[in-house]
Length: 377
Image (cartoon, rainbow, N blue to C red; front, side, top):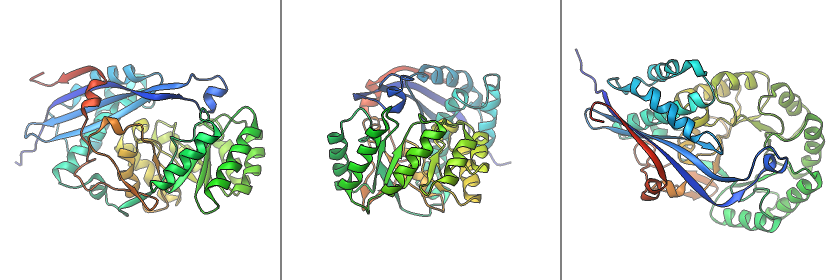
């Protein structure tokens, strides 16, 4: 009988990445959230008896980071002694280990760090970039910048950031909208479109802060600016509202980043609620469920634009056959020794094995807790 390698050690860590400047989107201006000052990261290292290792991560903005870490510490021992190649079965095992608190939300976001680590391990053992292991359709993914377009930035800053991003080779620009005064939104969109010209893809993101009536009214005004999409115009779970808006507007509608299960994505996709579906692998539970969302999207020939975490999503986007975008956020760069490159409007898929990432000394300095699991812990 063939002997397979086994998982014999796991290290979990919790780190907080501080932002240089607090940022605000529409959720802050409507009073529902406070400005974002830091992002929590759950890192997982999975090691096997033969010395193979994989690195994965999940994250939470504002509240939730310590909760992710605590849940992961409870369920991670379920992986000890298991064959790391059985990723689908192991995802189910971890989900059932914590099923009493649900199979979405924080429970699966804690699984995500471990699931990503298992996929990273598998690709490293195959000496392939993750995109190649999954089956890449492209070596570069069209990318757009978001981190320079927040509502907390002045219009002058937004325009400077847009010009800087385009000069770096980034292919499109996204800015935040959803200001309580819709005239501010319209003025900012008009100014950015005039500054970048008609050929550069421009997206807007309302972060769920419009009513159905407001989204339709402003969406019709925005038709004049040839937007690539309007993102999260309504509450993230309003499938019917998104579907009606998508049917009423020529501008494509994008949503999905806040959904935390395959079932939630299936409901949005089946309702025809999105022209661009925007799954987030750490939020949906890792690469294993993310691939199921891609399969649902492919059946409808939807466009896909994964949310945040470009270091992970560039690989997953490269493995999707239809139109795809990846979001350029430079926030995570200090966490890793390796950095991504952009050229001619595309983010280049790394050629290093796995995700092609290793944690930096800065990540270690921002770490506030660490747990070792296994026989030698």
